Length: 593
Image (cartoon, rainbow, N blue to C red; front, side, top):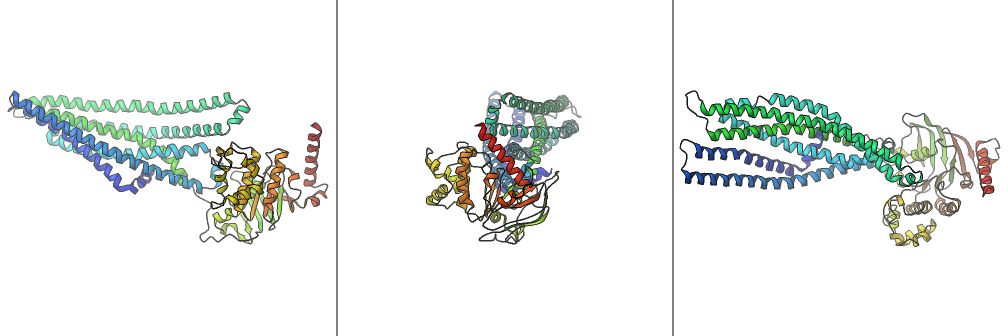
């Protein structure tokens, strides 16, 4: 019920449209209820004791049919208007839900995405939002119409013949019990369907993103098998849900028909026998009552089917509100302060940090990044190098200790300003499916063409962008697929240069390119790092030998710290040993070629 009430809150943002839809539905119900009354009047005039002659009967029948046709036409006219209003309301609510969900996804911390598949998240935004909205809106509207129809028809049936009306209610307890049992059983089924659908979407996104790897490693059969397994599971779960409904719906129809049978039997009896020996129950009343009995059971069965609709909607709603209710652990302080201006000193003070369900990654680390200087961080995989960069940007919160920018705790700085003061070039640069210029302008929307050119030249990227078919207006594809890794890296460097941040983070910026491309990128990086507080994370020691200070990190602790020459002068040190190993590898590679 919580999901229903919460989505209803979105509906009530548009009260006028919502109540207009209900008004149209009410009008349709009233017109439908009026039809049996006309049928009763026509039949009683044609077959009653004072029935008309042949000519009069023709007139009565013609007028009756015209009136019934008019009622049906008016009903469908209201229905046409209702559908249009309903569609407008539906799309407004879907837009609001999707917007809120997307806004929440933008606010959620990186840790949220660490534990979820992107395809499943996309499935919640696209499919689940639509499912829950349609279920609640259609369920609310249909439920209101059903209740109004039941109330109106019940009143008329008791006014016509209380005995027959009581017979109509006999199957009702069975129908209600069946509906509750079905709803309880179907909730889990629908939840399983939505979860499996999310898995299938996640797998499709993975296959699309990893298409080249699939071809490279000849994994088509493996992925086809995975796809079929998940699709088969989704098919089974859908069929399980449909199978329950295939039993529930006909069973409800059969139970309802027993009520109609009882009405036919007792109604036929009442046509002939009354306490005074006369026939006070007319043919018109009998036919009208039969029509009303059918009209009574139809909304009752509809209420049962709404249970199915709401169960499906609740399964989707749970997935939507799981995201909307997820806490945003990293947010601005109550009174955030401005990010320090000018040269920035970064200080890590006794930092401790661990990921959920994992041992401590950073253990009591103290480190200062001097303003305008380059600090390189090296060490084995899993030492905590990238984690420190993420902590500096507040993608995660430290367990204890503090990170300071010019003696100001990063927790006190406005998040947008904190992250805006940093430029990041990572191992896998992200570019949007847009033009070269649009990707650069993300850093600063008001940049002039001259500033774009200067940034590209400084990043050693101007030459290749001028060779593109439409130069800076060339569309580069999803994640920059139409560019080489080296070209993407240089565009990323140009983008950071355009932002002109006081702090720069390079996270394995050249690890995925060849030596020749690395030389080109290094030229751009040298320009980028000049006069900025820089943290350079690297595995290749040759790329950081000119750093002002080098930190060797292992198991979340600093083992060694100093310049390249100082660390090499410690022959038994970890850095010197790693330098020798990498030198041997380079020598062997050179001899092999």
